[in-house]
Length: 250
Image (tube, rainbow, N blue to C red; front, side, top):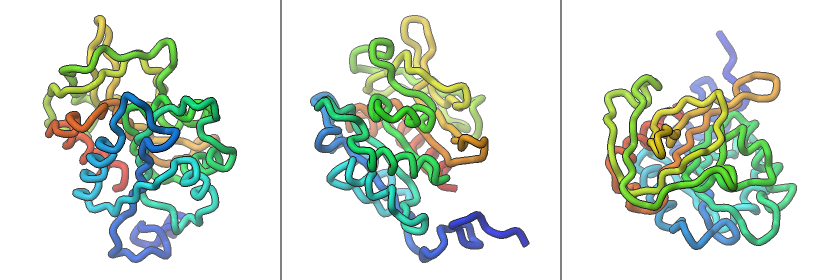
């Protein structure tokens, strides 16, 4: 019989955790120095938390991003949450992002833990002082290059060739910002796009992360949509996120 992966029991659940317990989602929201004047993080994080709870997760939204990342650095594998959700902005207070070496160590710990990560919208602008963030995300916003047209109706094109995650889904329109000219990694799988100035731009992608030695190191799903709560009123957007959560944690 093949032994279970390190830190997992025979059923594939985290070792030492009650198999009947709900999976845990840690949702980093744009609070404190990770808030900004343009994004209603309380609303969008509440919408994400609602979707996570519908999917069966217990959700924790901490009051501070950096101190929570610091705690991850020293957390035993058996006590790490099952999913990290990141919905934050770029700090503009002149301090690094992440804010301390210990916070950077916590984020590195997660990216190397083999556990999944769901990342939303403006989070691709953040953690600018942590180069590994771009690799773990599969891309990022590049200041002076990336942009978005004015908020308004966004026509989203589904890429059916990208696999079963979007099977039988149709193109749709929702009110949102359309991130454009993001820098992306060659290893991502793009599931949805939009077109701006004649160029097709990725809006949603998945990534199978790899460790420096080439071994699997967890799954990432990035959703460039989600500027405000109205975005999450879209049934198609909600369905895509439900499927992403299932893919991340299956």
